[in-house]
Each structure stands twice: as C-alpha cells, then as structure tokens.
Amino acid sequence: TLPNYARIVEVGPRDGLQNEKQAIGIDTRINLVNMLAEAGLSYIETGSFVSPKWVPQMANTDQVFAGIHRQPNAAYIALVPNMQGFEQAVTAKADEVAIFTTASETFAKKNTNCTIAESIERFKPIIERAKALNIPVRGYISCIAACPYEGLIAPIEVAKLAAQLISMGCYEVSLGDTIGSATPEQISEILECVLPYVPADKLAVHFHDTNGRAIENIHVALQYGISVIDSAIGGLGGCPYAEGATGNVATESVVDLLDKLNIRHDINWEKLNKASQYIRQALTNSAP
Ligand code: HMG
Ligand code: MG
Image 1 (cartoon, rainbow, N blue to C red):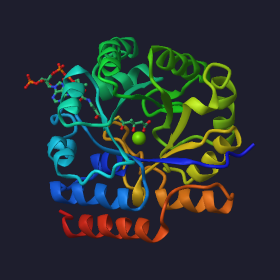
Image 2: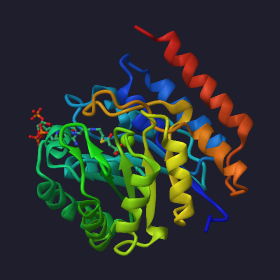
Image 3: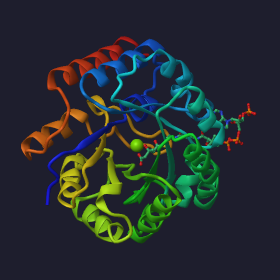
C-alpha cells in the first residue's frame, strides 16, 4: 500500500552539481541550497568531502556549509568517502553524513579506489565517531540493478549489503540505480529480495533517469511502502565514474507524482520552480 506521506532527500547540490562540466561558483551553490530549503526541502545533500582530484566540482564544500542560511528544521547532509572526509564534515557542522558503497566490485574500485569489503572497513570508525557525536549516518548502495562495468548485479548482493549497513548503524539505506537502467520489474525483484532483510521504513530509493524510467520505478517503490525518495532539482546530475549516466530523477517530477497519488509532502511548487529556474540560468550563464 502507498504511504500517506513521502520525504524527499534533495541531492541536486551534490549529485547534480558534481557532474557538471563547468566550474560552479560557491555563491551559486549556496544560493541553490538556500532556495531549496525555502521550497520546503528538509533534507538537503549540500555537498561532498571527497578528493578534489577525483571530483573537482565538489571542492570547497566547506565554504558552502559556511555560507548557507540554515533553516532550523532542515538537515544539511555531507557525503563522505572516508575518515578524512568525515572530519571535514564535522568541522563544517554537517547535520548528517552519507557514506557510500556499491554492489559492484569494479565500481567500488573506479569510484573509491577500494574493494567493497575495504569500503565497509572505512565506514566502521566513521560510524563509531558519528555515534559519539550524535551525527546520523545515511548509507548508499549504488549499482543495485546494474554496474556500468560489470552489467547485471544479483539482488541478493544488494540485500546482504543493505542489512550490513543497517546493522553497522546507518539509520537508512538509499538504493541507487546509478545508471538508470532498471525496469519496474527489476525494481520489484530487488525490493522483494531486500525487504526481508531491511524493512521499508529504513529504505530510500535513489534513481537516475537515464532511460526515463525513474518515475515508474519510484511508483513501484512507493507501492512497497518506501516513503523516502532521493531526487535532484531540475534533474541535474549523474556520476563521474558511470559514463553515460544522466541526471537524478527531477524533484519536480517526484512532487508531481506524489500529488497525483495523493501522497502528502512538504514542498511548495512555486518556490521549487524558482530554485529550478535559478540553477538552470546559473548553469547556462557559466557554460564553457
Ligand atoms: P585515493 O586516491 O585512493 O586516496 O582515493 P588516498 O587515501 O590514497 O589519498 C590520496 C590523496 O587524496 C591524499 O592527498 C589525501 O589527502 C587525499 P595527497 O597526499 O595526495 O595530497 N584525500 C582526500 N582529500 C579530500 N577529501 C577526502 C580525501 N581522502 C583522501 N575525503 C578516495 C580514495 C575515496 C579519497 C577517492 O576515490 C574519492 O574521493 N572518491 C570519491 C568519488 C566520488 O565522489 N564519486 C561520486 C559520489 S558517489 C555517487 O555519485 C553515487 C551515489 O549518488 C549513489 C548512486 O547514484 O547510486 C551516492
Ligand atoms: Mg547518484
């Protein structure tokens, strides 16, 4: 059955902007985050503390955190790959952190230069310290349906990894269709496999829209009782280590789906559209 209420995790300032070709000014990043919060988005992935050699677009995320106007009821999240990134997130006063691993060994190597098992080892001290500091930790699993290098991924690998992240202390696991290749049937198969390990109230979905299927796939996830949806304003984004992967599903499209299904949310359409127009214009103006 469908949930009554859905929460959107806005990933545009991180997942969206990390994949833009041109340099994006700090002020633009700050303005975008502020406008998203104004529009009612209460979970905003504000940036990442990763190696600037790997993802130059996310350099100076500390300045973004320092410059935003924080709404009291919003959580500003930082994506971190390791302890070094976590410490930067703490210094920047991120309200939450997100850690990320993947169901594909090759993708783990290409994206974070380690094996899946090594990524889990990196998370252990992070989660321990986060607990001591009262910082909630969100976990991502990418390539839940397919990997750009390995092809199809077995759903049981996703289920085992999701269970592991929850047992380690993540409050929620976001399931990523990184290359947007999944069909509704595959999403259904994956969720049937994962749900016996992790209940719907600890899962989120994170779909890229490469094949235009993200909205259908989110509808499937909602039917399984999953009520947390990751999306990016204007459908920005992709992943620098998954060539051809286009943007995340657009926040506007998710809000539209929720309205059609009579599922409550906190988003103000008018302000959301303003934020969308703002970032489109800013990207056009700074196009190389
Ligand atoms: P490495 O090269 O193996 O790192 O990269 P290292 O530990 O050997 O360190 C090498 C250098 O990097 C050192 O600097 C470190 O200080 C520095 P040097 O001594 O050479 O000057 N370094 C850092 N600098 C800043 N911040 C840090 C950091 N850590 C080390 N946190 C590493 C390993 C994990 C750092 C690298 O692979 C990396 O940053 N990867 C991140 C890639 C990334 O951000 N990908 C996109 C996000 S994931 C995604 O988009 C998928 C998702 O959306 C879900 C989905 O769609 O499915 C989440
Ligand atoms: Mg993503």
